[in-house]
Length: 233
Ligand code: SAM
Image 1 (cartoon, rainbow, N blue to C red):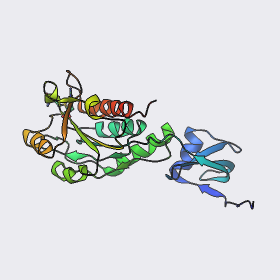
Image 2 (tube, protein in one colour):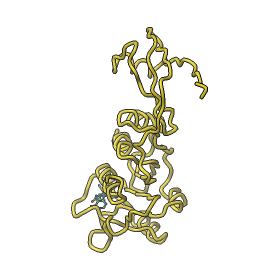
Image 3 (tube, rainbow, N blue to C red):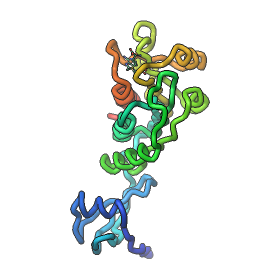
């Protein structure tokens, strides 16, 4: 078979800085590039200078870290850098889409999407994912409702659900392929929001007897869903 010659690549800017200053890579080292197509591309560093690294292609293979489950998390924006923290952890857990919203009791009314996308990018690199999760621009709570129609199972974490609500184990089956998890802000969901979700037939679920911080609820909820859907076997 004819061997396809691939052109040399030049790595500049942040990626070059990361390679030189953080990873302290040297000529001859092999690195993996992920152009977000689900494959790992192994390249060898041929030369290095102050502003760029020249790389030659070695081989490529499928990256097997992606879950089959399409889990999307719809978290409220949170104060300070908590949304960024959430994005980092949800990326590590294999969540495919993070779609932040602004609800009735959301205190933080805006967030720089670029910052959140950068967090998803960095976390994907760190944990070895070859597909970076989608991070949507924040929208109003009522606007996430139509998007939830695309999922086999929609659960919203509601601390008031302990007595009469369901457990994640009651609603997440291994056969579910597209799941959405909705988590409220520091102040919780308003009654109107709970009503809106319930009227759409979406299921309030408890995450136990204790009230979790919003970021804990999103991260723990996503982890339990991954386990129940068979992604950790
Ligand atoms: N409104 C609550 C209060 O002030 O008592 C607190 C809301 S909690 C800090 C933030 C979000 O985490 C909630 O809207 C809910 O989505 C989720 N959450 C926290 N603990 C939960 C639990 N035990 N069960 C289900 N969801 C929970």
